[in-house]
Length: 212
Image 1 (tube, rainbow, N blue to C red):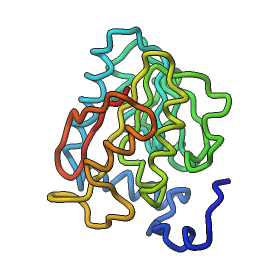
Image 2 (image 1 turned 90 degrees about the vertical axis):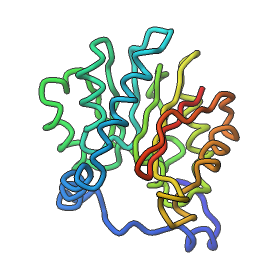
Image 3 (image 1 turned 180 degrees about the horizontal axis):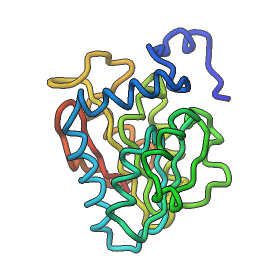
């Protein structure tokens, strides 16, 4: 369990929903594409980034995999890839299994929170780690660099990290405790030990970085 000082506990930003509950998970699933239909462009960019890798890609880990939207796109488009879907919500995993259908035979579902420091335990190494609209679920931006460092430890040699989240600033979100600016996102990745960090898609309040 992450240890926090009392002042840190009160400063975490509470979530207005509990995605472990099926009703909340279904509501999020139904509204996500309505609110941000350009998510499809980000899914396509995840695929193209992995497809362009100069090294063979077999194992992909998705953090905060939710109802399986990104995983479905990856598995449909990349025939040699298997996906490990990590999410703290059994409700989300049920939705993902339904969405993936026969593709679920190439997926492993791990019910675990990436807020826990032991989340990478016994998962092995991955060619890519991906995450979409999930980093802010740490509930405060000060935890991001620690999460990114844990991701780096889970990458195979030559592996890369694709991380997409909301940002603070023009066209983005307003809560600067929960969300980071684009520059802060880059700095968090660099402070975690990544030496190459590039924004590859910036649209509709979301930014996707590639880190290696």
